[in-house]
Image 1: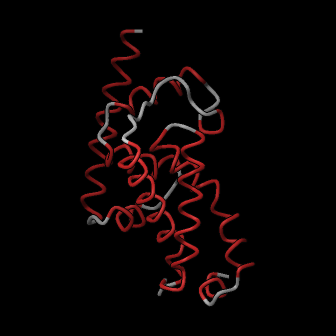
Image 2: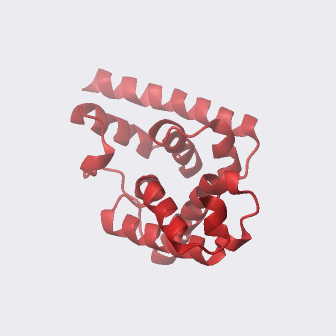
Length: 167
């Protein structure tokens, strides 16, 4: 289906976007924490993918390519809008675990991480992406991504333990 989309088949492209829309939305939401802004980022991602899909040389990397476009669109959106990202208690229902108390603690803990660490952890554990794909998206060596995730998880563990102890 990706090959058809690359050659200009709009129906194939539409089907691919329908398959990826949830993943794109969650990725955008992890950056902006606002439903409307996330939808705008997804729209921009789909547009950029549509106008440049003919440049994709390796169809097997379609999802990696698309997520990378999404990440870049989110970063551009943040830069252009100069908005502050707030990861607080206003969490989208579609993006939280069943136990809201755990979800709030987790999002509070994620808030203290730097952008790259938070993104790597969200991609790995919320989107279930392989480490190699995360490394490709972030343009980093695999070993660096593993280190970032490991250190981020250690920091999360400390923050969650402190929260549990203080609560």
